[in-house]
Image (tube, rainbow, N blue to C red; front, side, top):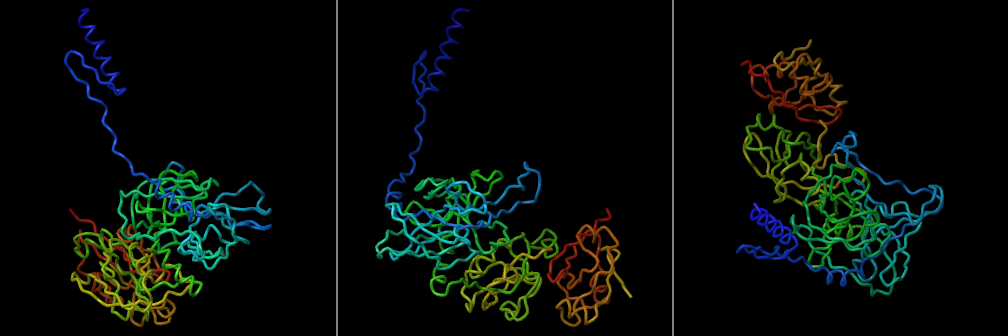
Length: 492
């Protein structure tokens, strides 16, 4: 009994010492030392080289309130619902609390891109400011002129005068970034200037679903970003700027491990245009697209749900002139694979107007390539017509659960439809149409990619619908087209 207790005590001692990293030999058993952790990158060289080119941006507001920080909530759900998280842009940090009607200063970050004094930051850092100044690492304070801004990309270009000998950052290639690569940020979180934080690239090509930023595919990182970091640079291990830190995803307003940066290639494209003409021009394709739904996948007999389904083509656009049609599925844009509708708008927007680009599409089960000449997006136009995501004596179909009636030409003209195009849903009579989301007043333009312009044409297109099959309808609602898949229940 005594011997057993001693052996147990020795075993306990062995375990405790091993946890402390001490190796002991007990009854011939060798305890191994704790494994040595892999060495981490040394960021000191990157910081020493680039910190002098990072600036603190002070936006001053004289006697009026600065526009509040905008945010986007996911679904308005309960606080513990992941969909209730908030995308939060950081407008900087007020230097001291003050009532909204009093003068105040907000802090952000920026970086010098040319020795003659051009500086990049976020638009929301300087938006509506009465005066902007920048502070350099050597404690110089310089007045900054806002050369131009682009709220859609959230980019602002500043200019200071300092004799043409300012330190600058090196610009990298954000398109070469891959998840898992090390990155670091330099900025002024909470006013603590020249703070360095590091992490990895979590994802690339991230679309945030924001109506005000449909043309940016963000870099997602786990680099700690907080108030005052906005507009600061994101570096790769080669010491090159690959992004501009912009916003986080948070349910508390503070950093929670998910941060987003604007790719530097997007920003530099905007810089050149802001320098030369003071605003940014974007390309326009002239289509409205939506996801390839499960119903579409079944109806089209597709191998998967990749691509962007064309729901609407803008008259007189490059897309229409190239022959694109509702029902086409865009698989590739200018040698860039399109996995989802969100992939398309950033690519189109970055294309110089007048450029002719190849588009690979799937039509009636066959792939083909068409050449499209990209147009110019109106400066006040948002996502519509640029590869944006779509919202979603009568007769009818008892199987589909709806009735239709003719459209007169006056109504077609009001709805911007061509003569002989579409039939009006008069009533939703069954579960199939109701569950798909169809409503009275919707206009059906196509049935399984076949145009319908009369009650007779609709009846002919739906007469052979069988139980268990899926019917794809192209529907116009509120001047926008969307595909609806109606799956008829199997009788078995």
